[in-house]
Image (cartoon, rainbow over all chains, first blue to last red; front, top):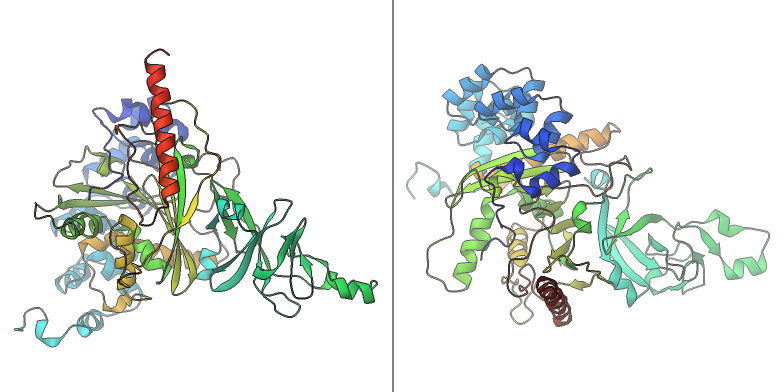
Length: 154
Length: 396
């Protein structure tokens, strides 16, 4: 069954599309604002403005792979592009760098948890709740029959 | 958890239900309540049990100013005030006993064909006036009771990959189709905004220019999915959820269309013949997944992966909001400013007022059990609008 609400808007130039202009007006944005912030959507522009993120900063963080929401968080944490690049070099998603900074998790710790099978946001919540890696790993496999654990013969 | 959710307005019934009844029993947040409309048009939501001798208020009768218990005739208005105690006032009119007794009552408002209840502390926030409520189209409301905890329902609201499997691929299997599988997801993105989270995706048949990525879909905080229609997951109690769907079908043309009554119908979740969950429609398929997770899903037995980033995100937000409420702050997506609460826009693929491109009225895909009269009313509206639009197009 096709996604019943997926009727993609034809967007050659999003900022010029009448639907986008109408949505922008609902956020109090002008066509000029859309141009200034292109290619961000009205809701993204609204969020950026609400958090004092400039178009230049939004574009800079976009080049690092961060969308507006994460860019706002990165700025609030006084992060630099070099921070996200360090995490990207270790094959983490750019947003993971922000999540880790927010939750106080070092790259080494994140790598250790990832090797045990935990994606960063999951690991961050577990660490925040006081779990050690050993405890979390043991709990993770507690519900699985011994014979089908990874690396074991069934 | 209840302390958090009580900070929001929740849809609890369709206004149309009160064209045929005055009182309806409802259960919300573990409380048994009586929802009523008195003869003055006031909606009330009060304890199900009379504070006098605990009789069932849903068997009471409405009057001009409230709901009267059928046991000894005590009358309560929609604010919970006791207005009349027949025998007490006969014997001791000077006692004013009625002023010393109240029934627990909650605020109720009507909007968009729904009755909304607020069960939290005063002052209540604004009841959101979503822009989509004002869109032109045929609207309908469908309500189901789903026997599981509300939050596993809401986690589904930020899980893009499930659509590929639970709906697209499983539907093919259910229809006995052997063709290729649905386009696979390639990339996911999540953004917070004022009223929740936006989830975005790139599938193997789309690019980052597609609205699935540029606009995305909305996990409306704290307990709703918005994808052009709304799906609220309202806690009945810890183990049951009221699924309230508000749907709109665009109509041909752009001439004014007024819908006198937004119909409200009860959508079944089980196939009475087999005793199994209904699997034929989109939301029914969701229900199968939710109840299949257990009455209250045991998260300690999960193994979360990349497709679960959104789920983890809203769990974190929920915990943050619990702390905020405990600290006396408003949780996320609470609207306090009446000036802000006017036709509040939400991101929507295709825009809030989409054009009709179909050549005939579509079937309702979301829930099984749509009454024939609702489908017929929609088809008539659709055909009337199409005919009117054709007449305008022909210069008539």
